[in-house]
Image 1 (cartoon, rainbow, N blue to C red):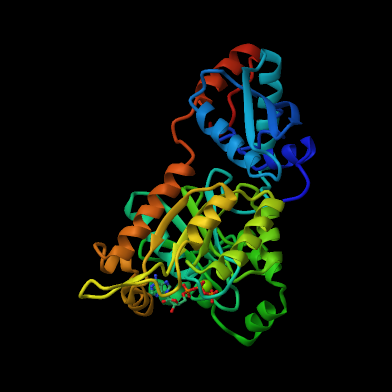
Image 2: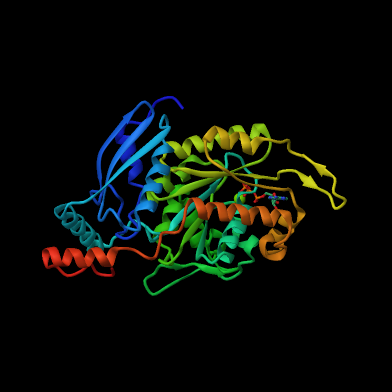
Length: 386
Ligand SMILES: Nc1ncnc2c1ncn2[C@@H]1O[C@H](COP(=O)(O)OP(=O)(O)OP(=O)(O)O)[C@@H](O)[C@H]1O
Ligand SMILES: [Mg+2]
């Protein structure tokens, strides 16, 4: 991948790590100390509010995933220590200021995990997998939103059978439509008057995405927000990385080697925009007839090769299955209509792997404990909403 990331690149990547209890990124909260890069090893001094904080494992894992995704970094060493009382007071001041200013650049809660489903090539199954992964996560008990970032080529509404139109609330924010238990936003759900049509057509794709992130009243309780990305457009990805630094990516590819090359390009872009790749899903991976004959219609090995190249797990191989097509056409995703079908089982497995690799921000935090501690230190009232 050419050059090796500098300590500045590492710090930039760390801006994508959010402290789940304070809601700010670890750099702005002053938790990052010295950062060094030598011989492919990044070493980061990380100060946590309390060394025994239950958030520790999650923050450490996030730091490692983000930093090891950078070019030329093979290993990330995190040296954790506890903050001094003075540092804790500074941190709480930042947290208070954040709570007061409250002007988040997007309406997405920083604690919501954001997963973009991308590929380098069109038609590999991004949309089919996005809706099915979203539903599989919902069935597993998570609160899930799905943003159709394919502004012109939207297919999410049809695949989820969403027919309701998007409407604005009293704050003039767009309220997501609910379909199959998923909170959905798509240009396909906008009322098409000539005026809105003109407005949306005039927007650049990246601007349209920005609108959806800023003007939608996303549920602050979402565990996951999935994004169905348009095929291989770089500016939308860069916009996403800028607007939602916590975004991570799942790359979809087919078993074909040529497709793999295109997917590798998108993964490279993800790295350059500090968007870590969570894993690869191989779709349209072989076809088995009713009589049990198996055909590798699109070749083999593309998913494994790409996952190996990127050093990320192959999350699942989803077979070619007419039930995926009919599920999409009828608006009842295969994981609901035929949960026992091998394609549905593979997608459910991929969803479980994603949850394992990018666990939802934990509810149980040590915020209350810290707030009490800080209050006793500086006799200040605890942070609002803690
Ligand atoms: N595992 C599968 N088995 C059979 N058909 C599939 C499978 N996955 C996707 N398809 C079908 O392939 C076609 C393309 O899928 P989909 O629209 O999900 O791809 P996409 O990557 O989102 O495409 P685009 O780049 O145009 O957004 C659809 O007709 C869909 O039903
Ligand atoms: Mg699509």
